[in-house]
Length: 168
Image (tube, one colour):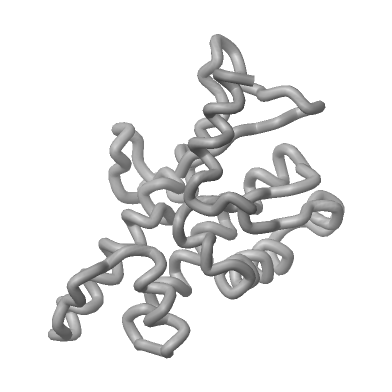
């Protein structure tokens, strides 16, 4: 889970440009190991990699065949068709995404949270369950001015944002 903080129209990188690691906020201090070496990072729970791994594990546990393609959009398609394992995996995913976003809202009270990546291309049907969980959990004083939206560039949002920083 990548991210960037734009404060007062400026990219905020923190001290020595080490800030903005949004995927590595801790949501479970005794949780699963993350690729960064820490435990309980949002990345380890809410990334599309975590979603696909959980979905695969649920299929195996329920003795169901693995589909040829397991990615965020294919799981979302199965979720919309009410497949039990896809629903369970995405409900968990939505909860973890919301937990991370609530933490960011409580710290920064942003005007907008933009969710990108391939799965965000499912649009409102993907964003709305996250949004509902965020607004149900966040302090109203912090979240009432925060819009949660899908990136207009979908899976290209991160690449285009980085290119804009480098090339202006």
